[in-house]
Figure 1 (cartoon, rainbow, N blue to C red):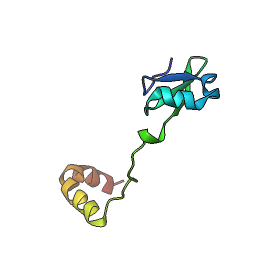
Figure 2: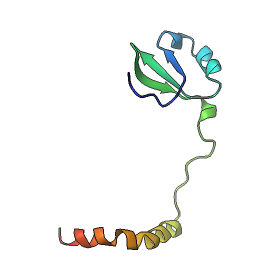
Figure 3: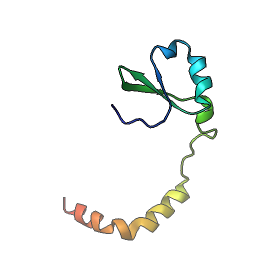
Length: 82
């Protein structure tokens, strides 16, 4: 059996009535099983983030690069010769 990323499961047959599956899930993701193998996930809207993912600003990106320079410098030095 595959590793599941949720404790809730349903079968393909149960998906004939998706509202019942969603009601039983209580707002949590549900693994969809076919022949005891996970074929996908049903993720209710309330389980998804309300906010859109935000992109880093140019200033945040530059700060990150400055702060990580010491950590990545050996790799950059190694790659210069390649």
